[in-house]
Length: 374
Image 1 (cartoon, rainbow, N blue to C red):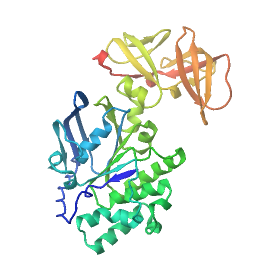
Image 2 (image 1 turned 30 degrees about the horizontal axis):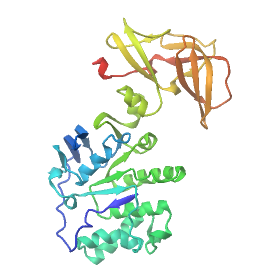
Image 3 (image 1 turned 180 degrees about the vertical axis):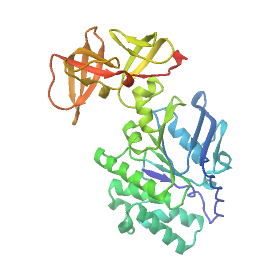
Image 4 (image 1 turned 30 degrees about the vertical axis):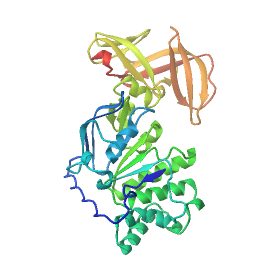
């Protein structure tokens, strides 16, 4: 993780940036209005509109090339939108140079100055702004305390672990007291265990300092763990914006259902309030015709043949295929009588063989709203 300091280009003390007006109660801190961006013939962002609330932890999730980093660079001022507007706290942000925005960016690469101590790395931007020496000391100490690095103030970056260096990069961003902190895949270089630890610490830190975080990642699990809301980008367009539980349990499109977690896509036909997918049928609301449903593997469960039946439960026999051990769960591929294949996730208990009885509830088959249905 590294930090791009908005004031590193200054060679002498400058007038401090004017603080934008704080968003009124209930109003967004950041507003992205119909923003588009192209590089030559390649369109990277298409008509993106997004509001971010004060104090929110919002994650921009997407695969490589979806435009998520470009969106962050537009907000930070490192790129300019071709069309559209960006507002923050009642001020037109896209017309301001980077150093006039109360925004800081933390990247995945460290970019700490190796010849400066931890204290001086964090203080660097404040010194460039001409902040008084006494205030610098106070603000640096506060920032290091926030990230639990006070004991390392005099240390050289080379003496720190990767996680500690990332905390210093965060402190260097927070010391400038931004209204908005942009984080571009800041944990991607860490090993799995440290990454999980830093996720927890990052979320706790955001809650403590109350700063709005706009976090970019391609990792769905990371997005689910950290976010108040997730904005899923697909080829430069917003696919869905929702809280983690909603985007997982009620995906709008097949792309969302497949990108955020694993799912079974059931391409069915709805007739007279009943969805039919091969030999399967279940009650369904909505208009008749072709429809696609998302059925998460964990919503298909093993049952006993003697269990009672009802209209809201779809029961069937299937043959066990590949079974993958995933720790506390097993991912099982099953083949139905008509040859259709489903993925099932069950609590890890034993190796299954032969035929077993399975069931799912009609309410767990979530109807999607893809373009072919509109």
